[in-house]
Figure 1 (tube, helix red, strand yellow):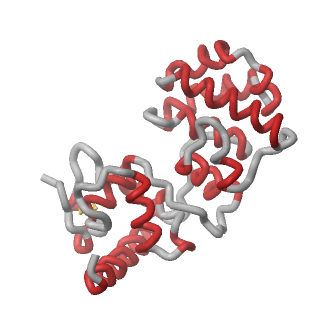
Figure 2 (tube, rainbow, N blue to C red; figure 1 turned 90 degrees about the horizontal axis):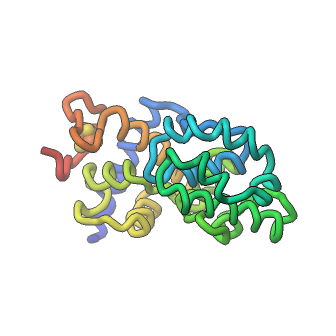
Length: 221
Ligand code: SF4
């Protein structure tokens, strides 16, 4: 991207984020959890599933397996039965079970607290690790990346922060990390809120959008 165009995008992006932060304030994950491990489990379950559905399933799960050790020793098929309503339940149950086993074997039963350690675990991608780090382990930063879920992808394309054709979340994350200073890399919480409330996937409500004047509205009918 030419330097001048990048400077304009950066300036516009900063205004967009300020407006969204002013509108939504300090937003937190809608997933219910008591500690970093429970948030990690809930975040794994939230792939391709709503937070509401995950929150319906986790109380039974966390009651049956109250510690990481309980998850590690669990019968993976019993975990599958409980998490089945969240979809892709076999993969999710295995990811949770093996992550618990890894924490017991490699981290002395203590939840890892860095991006490098978290992403060593099966089923824990950068996005999942960033959610846990930004939400509960080190919310004040320094942040290690930007959470790029479907909402962040869609808004970034529509608002013209990344090219409209970009689909690769890693590429989008890299561009957002270039556009925004590190202290703003926890932007996903307000982007997701705006994506759910206004910039909805099936029909954006542009007329009532607070960043309407800053948005390129790419791909919006
Ligand atoms: S103006 Fe429309 S497309 Fe742009 S962020 Fe707002 S709702 Fe989304």
